[in-house]
Amino acid sequence: NFYLSDVGAQNIRNYRYKGEDKSLLLKYVTNPIFNKIVTLFPLWLAPNVITLAGFLCAVVSFCNIIYFCPLLDGTAPWWAYILQACATIAYDALDAMDGKQARRTGSSSALGMLFDHGCDALNTTISSLSLCATFKLEAG
Image (cartoon, rainbow, N blue to C red; front, side, top):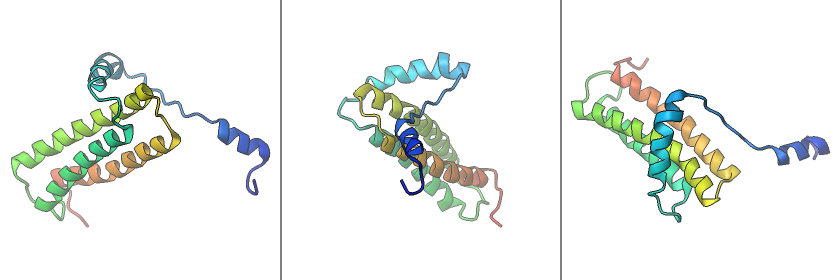
C-alpha cells in the first residue's frame, strides 16, 4: 500500500467491470443468435479458448492479406478479401460469445477480461492494417 491508501486499495478490490451496450441490433439480432450458438459449446471449453480462436482468425486473415500486399498496396486475390470479411465476422461473433461462455460456466475472471481486452486491442491494430491494404492506403 505504498502508492495507495487503504481506502484506495479496498476500492480496487471491490471494483467490478460492467459494460453496457444499448444497440438495438445487438439486443434484437445478434444477442439472440449468440445466446443460441453459445449453448452448442461444451461446458468444459474455457472462454479464453474462444477468445484465442477468434483472435487467430484475425491473425490468419491478416497474414494472408499482408502476404499479397506487404506494403499495403497492390491487389490480393478475390478470395483473400472474402477470407478477411469472414474472419472479421468470426472474430466479432467469438468475441461476443466468450463472455457468455464465461458467465455460463461460472468462470468469469479479471484475468479472462484482461486477455479478452488485450486481444481486442491487438485485433484493432491488425484489422486496421488489413483495411489499409484492402483500400490500398500504402505504407509510408
